[in-house]
Amino acid sequence: MESKIAIKDLHFSYTPQEEILKGINLEFDNRSTAIIGQNGAGKTTFVKLLKGLLKPTKGNIIVNGIDTKESTVANLASYIGLVFQNPNDQIFKNKVIDEVMFGPLNIGQDNEKAKKISIESLEMVGLKDKIDANPYDLTLSERKLISIASIIAMDTDVIIFDEPTIAQDYTGKEKVKEIINNLKGKGKLVITIIHDMDFVAENFERTLVFNQGKVLFDGDTREVFSHDEELKKAYLELPHVTQLCKKLGYKEVFLTVKEFIDYKQNTKGR
Ligand SMILES: Nc1ncnc2c1ncn2[C@@H]1O[C@H](COP(=O)(O)OP(=O)(O)OP(=O)(O)O)[C@@H](O)[C@H]1O
Ligand SMILES: [Mg+2]
Image (cartoon, rainbow, N blue to C red):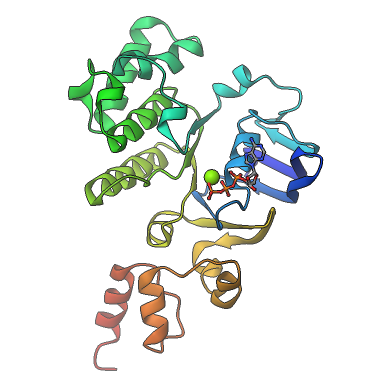
């Protein structure tokens, strides 16, 4: 399959004193991908580069056949959507519907289509009844969902979430999970920066581990979580069920509770 995004020898620094990304090579295909790594590892910087908000100091990022160095943010906007880590950095309108419609209008959709898709997006995040509210009157959790709706409304092929489950309680997390699955079902490439390892195990086929500006592991999520010692050194822990099964003495890497229960039921009595 042709890759949607190719990254070649990517280096990036904000200041000449400190290099933040130190030579990253990888390609994104259609697999939903989690990006994990300790605070300050360079995850947010990396996705801002993908989105063209920052440009590499060395190396190249090819998005949909075009080098981000030669492409404008506006051009990339119709292909890659990025939901910011903090919704307050993203939201700037006083009415929810205006906020959500801004993106689609900005990439050239007409008013009617933009409105229709914005209402559908609000429905998808469960906030259709807040359409006329002021985003600043909503809770942080709701604002985060509004910022997600704004990006979904742009209907881009690639959608990046930066910490979508932060400030979400159980219901909010289930909602985010449902949104991600819905987008995957539509054939979109979903890339998600996330600290919640249980969420990684349950929802993403591929996992990238960032460590001190480099990619420490890149592979199928199950394979990545088999490197428990190295992950510990990178200050990352295994998903809870994976830890439990390991402590119980199983050699297999279990990613979800369901997987483990199915395994137990199938091996009962043997
Ligand atoms: N605008 C900026 N100017 C200078 N340095 C920055 C800037 N933004 C981030 N950094 C630095 O770059 C490094 C990587 O930051 P980045 O935000 O990409 O990490 P992260 O992996 O997303 O961390 P977190 O998990 O805390 O969100 C950090 O050392 C940070 O202090
Ligand atoms: Mg970050």
